[in-house]
Length: 309
Ligand SMILES: [Zn+2]
Image 1 (spheres, rainbow, N blue to C red):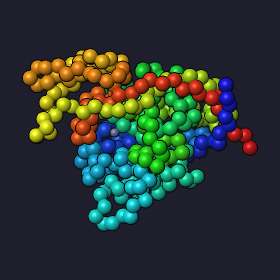
Image 2: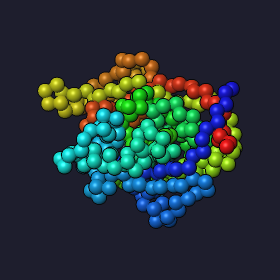
Image 3: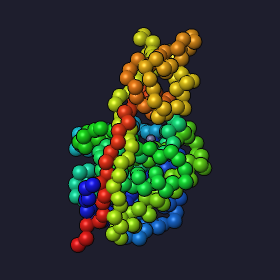
Image 4: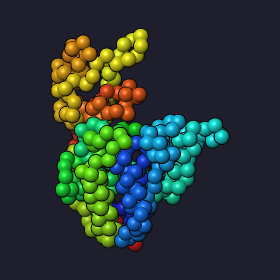
């Protein structure tokens, strides 16, 4: 098994409210900001409410989905007074915590999101990043709740569009089910526990502990399916089938029911075996996604430890 030594991790950002109606991150960040603990062991921890204007009105966004604004193209675009609010805010956040892809970027950025889908806690990331995957493995083994899963979006860094892409090691903590505009104590507790475990892992890593490698399972996004729609009006003509609803990460086989038309007909799945997730996510109706699909992969993690000077 390979071993890597990696630089110490000193700057951590916890962000919430990137989507203004996903309440766990909003309340977690407000609570942490109250306590004003900015140094935990060897690492500094900063909190940020990413989209304060959207949080004020409890909406996902004002002009444009902030969590789609961090591509290299959008971050390098010239701002004008008429630029969408979220593009301006993305530039500010990139200046504060990036610049994306640069040596000045913060070490860790954990962006807290909620989903209306029954997904439990998921780590979402772009690349096979050993730090992120080791933190994931640690939380999976220590958390008092379950399940904790990993999802990889196979997107090259220049096209990576979400906030965590500005950090050296960024990931989303996606937790559900929780309706938008609602705060659930059980989900709040899960996130607080995970954030404590992240700081705990960092302290152990920075103080020289070796984290053993091993296999971790992840779900690698392959494609997405839209709802059946009326070709003239574009209205959806079916809802997610009761047998698929709330069954995120349960293997979907050809012939399994996926939609139920409003006239009572069942629509069956025709693709290859895959794992559905973000099933019936509220925010994805506008994106024309009824659910996403993944294949399950196994990742061999090397052991890691901090580089000694
Ligand atoms: Zn979100």
